[in-house]
Amino acid sequence: MPKKKRIPKFRDEDEEKAFWADHDSAEYVNWKEAENVVLPNLKPSTKTISIRLPESLLEALKLIANKRDVPYQSLLKIFLAERIKEEMRTQ
Image 1 (cartoon, rainbow, N blue to C red):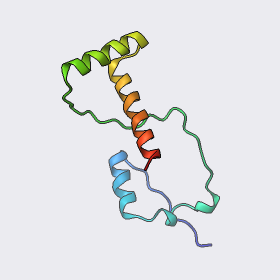
Image 2 (image 1 turned 135 degrees about the vertical axis):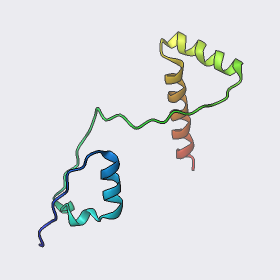
Image 3 (image 1 turned 45 degrees about the vertical axis):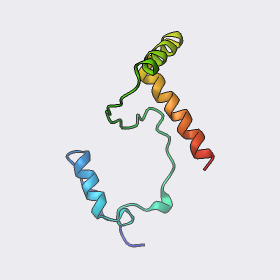
Image 4 (image 1 turned 60 degrees about the vertical axis):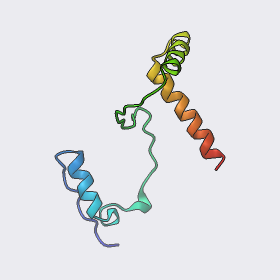
């Protein structure tokens, strides 16, 4: 088996992304020897968006969130994730 290339050090994530966009990882990693890992504390990247909601819907969301003692934005993410999961199952 030919020797694998050495993975360079990267200054930041953007530089690493650019590198892997133009290089084949098989030249650097023996995927047959790779092991699965679990990253339980990995948080997904988030993106801030702006969304317009009817005031009554927002107030209802805040009321439910208050009853559950969670921030309303967190509750909205939970509701969206549940609905998206449901929609994906039916397709």
